[in-house]
Length: 406
Image (cartoon, rainbow, N blue to C red):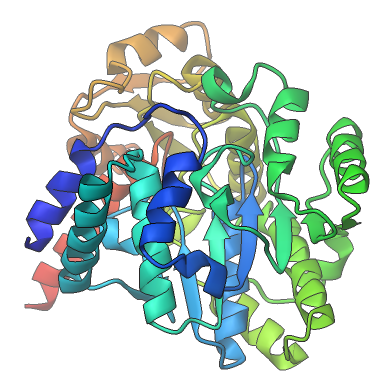
């Protein structure tokens, strides 16, 4: 099996498989030697911010000399980004090797799992065989029933910002979604929570109490004075969660000097999170209403006129998101991707009727990006609405820069 074949195989696996839950994944992992039982985890759930919190936490641990694993989703440009050791993506050769090994066990045993669970199993095996000291493990979706929740315990369970998203799977209310995400808190464990609104924090606290878990809610003031490489007004809240997570790790015996925290927060890299890729272009993966509000606040804080380039998926609250981010823009260009889930550009434009902002329809995302810069000489362009769109734009920028260097 080569790299391309491995990705084709992974993407051929159903996204959902019955029975729901982790029974088959547990069996598959048992047959693989239960690598997850030999690893230590920082387990990170939440609607928004969990990728940033995971990235900052991993970088701080790496600054201390720990050998780190990082499991995240989705990817931006390459599938390999989802599985990293010491900041390095899994190689194409290793991706093919571990896919084939897990495939053979899964198919011969009949322990059939979903696509995400399959990748989770391959990642656990890879992290174990690479002798990782600790793995920062980002939940795929939800918490209680997520494949990553197959682990028996975590050093720290982290609950980030909670808002409405994936409502077709997790529930129609913030309260329902919060309960689902609380499922990663372990009996007698240690938990850290983002400073969510009171109704959310109350649910997390009650769940932690029921599990006899020690819970600390992060205080945004703890992030004061730190230089953050990840920009955006919301990142100081994520940084506060990370700082509290570091304190919990110290309680568990991890040697994390303050210098590592300073350097880690200053040097974290995380694509498509208010990413200033050029002085006139920001790429942000905001794709739900809460994320759009945070993005808008960060853009407004720059006090520069900006043009939005947006594409969105049908299973998101795309109409609400588009109207939030368009409100104070100089102009909005709506575009689309060649994906069945993507909302047609004309449909988004119709939803923006009545706002006092020019709306341009351009079905070609790269052409939409390039023409957005024509709005005015000093305009800032912000690409948002979908991580798939973010990936397309980043690939185009990388290719352009590479060709310029030849």
